[in-house]
Length: 122
Image (cartoon, rainbow, N blue to C red):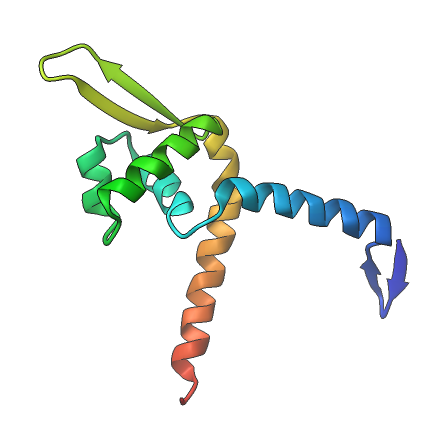
């Protein structure tokens, strides 16, 4: 690493690797709904309608697609219970809990940004 003003700067190779990792993460977590859905399910397991009520303004079609994507990436689990009618419960996986620090930092940054914007005169 190169040192610049007492700060460590990544090398070109380290930066390229980090950029690739960010692209990989954003490919899985892209869009405005995936992280809120994961956060919602980290609180407790829920049925489809419960998720839709908790996450305002998400259409049923978009929610269904996002849940499928999250399941394919092992971030949520879809449990189907053979009752009449069939009961489907979605839950966060242990793997999704690896995003806990990311979600905490993102929440903190969002709060700081909102306060910064509110403090500005437009």
